Image (cartoon, rainbow, N blue to C red):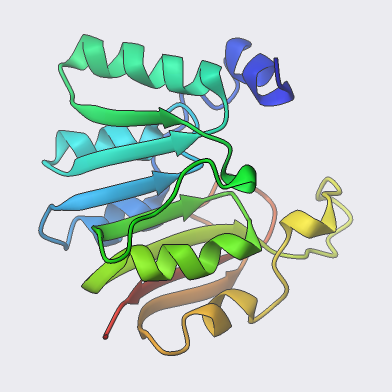
Length: 187
């Protein structure tokens, strides 16, 4: 059992609403194939499936994926839910296979290259990731899981940047500063 399994068993993050960035920008896209990396119990996966997307949701936590599967069954939603450790590269992203790839509240730097390669030409990547934050009111986090200012946008410099933001968003319930990006693959 992982720490995340226990947290999900206790109900943590199981009622979270989809992040406003994901709902706002994905609503402007024609539904296609979407990959939700580090999906947790599926707040984005379910929201997208309800809107006609063909969803693959991947998470390390067996408990999170079980919660997602039960919710999808109850709502009659089809979501391909996969238990895989992304850090151990147990899930491969096939090249140019998704119209949309999302990552929310998860940082694994070596995932950027396969994420970008797995997005179809003309497809979109969306990410919301915690930033280094010197605010004394914010709980300390392992620096390995925090982006430095400008780092997320630099990952997508050759893409068309549709939206980019760094700081504390009033739309986000988390007090920590985040980096957001919506980027379209040009070639």
